[in-house]
Image (cartoon, rainbow, N blue to C red; front, side, top):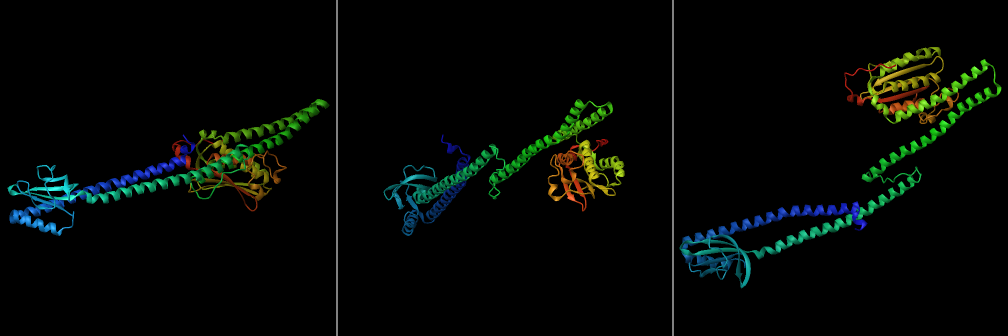
Amino acid sequence: MNRSFRLSAVNLGLGYVLFGMVALVAFAAPLWYAWQVTIRDGRAEIMQEDAARLAAEFNRDGPQGLTAYIKSRVGLQIVHERMLLFVDPAGHRLAGTLTRWPDDLPAQPGTYTVMVQLHGQPSRAVCAYLALPGGYKVLVGRDLAKFVPLETRFWYGLSGAVTILVIAGIIGAALIRRELLSRVESIRHTVSAIMQGELSHRLPERGVNDELDTLSQTINRMLDQIEQLVHGISNVSNSIAHDLRTPLAELRSRLEELSLTRPGAEDTFSEVEAAVTDVDRVIRIFNALLRLAEIDTGMRHSGFVPVDVVQVGSDIVEFYLPAAELKNITLTLHSAGRATVAGDPLLLTQAVSNLIDNALKYTPAGGSITVDIVQRKAGETELSVVDNGSGIPDAEKSKAVERFFRGDASRGSPGVGLGLSIVEAVARLHGGFLKLTDNHPGLRATMVIASTTLANFPKSQPIPPVS
């Protein structure tokens, strides 16, 4: 089979043509049936009424009166308008437009369709036969050939409509096929470029919001995410290599120096402690990366339980109060009642701890940090950590959640640049996001958590304690 006949566009066009033809026939069939029934029944009723009038004339004036009446009717009527025949008991014609009684007309009175001789030519007619007293008979008929042109016009009209429908369907199928193949070819070209590694390519969008445009938009968003993930993996790999190189180089240098100089016990243990610190730093990096990988895969969804975010925030604020007091920083919690969400209490604790820990790093002595928790009517809980420290420049806010990113203000402070990345991943796992805005001065870091999944958990289930 030719490839073009297997294309969905052609099949779709032909399907519409077939559907249109079926619909047209379905419309024409009852119309034709109504025409036939209406004409047939109306015609039979008219002929029965004519026959009844002739019978009444016969009963009033007898055979001579009816003969005269029929002759006057024949002289006045339009040619071929109506067939009339009045015969005596022997079957001899007394009056009418027919020359003789039809041979195949049944003996019983009624309405029949028979062949008659009309002006010497056989013609198919519908006749109403009525038996009169004394053996006389009267016949009233109509020539069916009179309706043939009208029926022919009906079939011609139906055939013309089918022809126009078929032509329009073929042209429409060709246009659809050309348009669809054009769009598919552009999509194929873009996908081929992406398969060759050119991730910046995107599927064309025409802005018409049709099905293919919607598909292109969806695929483009997926490609944006894939490109971001690929670049993120590349950046993470480079960052890991960079961040691991320093502690490993320091560790090797210390061990090499110990091997060459072989100092006393006190210096040796001091260097060993420094080496352990470098190893702990490497372990922290890997633990943070493993935690991020676990969050990204969604494995922690299985540990979701009802969690009171206010209780979580209160416990963490209480834990960090001594550290805040050492720096002469005011650490407070603001909330209005309970704010219960479905989530992982350990991850939420880790995320809030990271936000408070960052705020403590960059808030000067005498400053303040506020943990603000609000549950919105839209089913979302907002947990904001607000400080009046150095903040984050606008140019760096979008990059602050990238893994291993460290801004200019954090170059000299401890850390590996994964704190906000973990917070953003935890928020995303809980159906929300992390938003960073200015506090003038300072930073407002808001973690939005969706609360709509609470319906999946029994209300009677206790909220686990947060350690």
